[in-house]
Image (cartoon, rainbow, N blue to C red; front, side, top):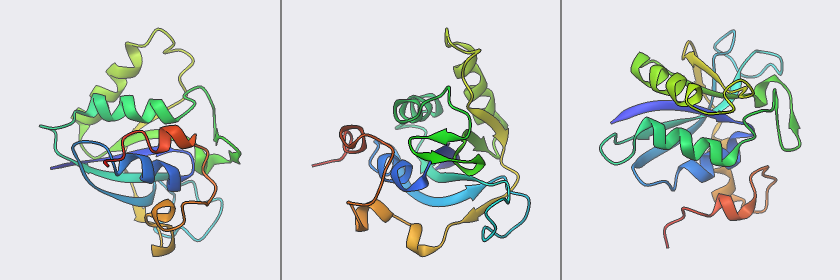
Length: 158
């Protein structure tokens, strides 16, 4: 199993989408690359993200990035849907340099690569979100989500 951290705006919808993908064994809502170990401050530099544990024999890093690009606006800076601010930026983070290399190559191969605003960075700091944010849309399916409902449920297993 391997881990990658994907940021795509509000973590509730991103987690709900990613948790149903083939090859994903678990997800955890959290915050990546903040300035400290505490997520209580609003301007702490974190990106809301989802820690994705996956089986690379069932789903590749590139496939996970494909899925991420399906649910985000890759040209937007610090905004997804109605959520605005630095913590809603898009990003791909990992402690595995091979993951970051694959992510950079993925973006570089796109014809729109110069417009893509998804950051690709080494994971320097990760903090798990409070329990109230874990699997939020599973527990409260009516809560706000910037991801269109058809995409949110596209990969749900029946």
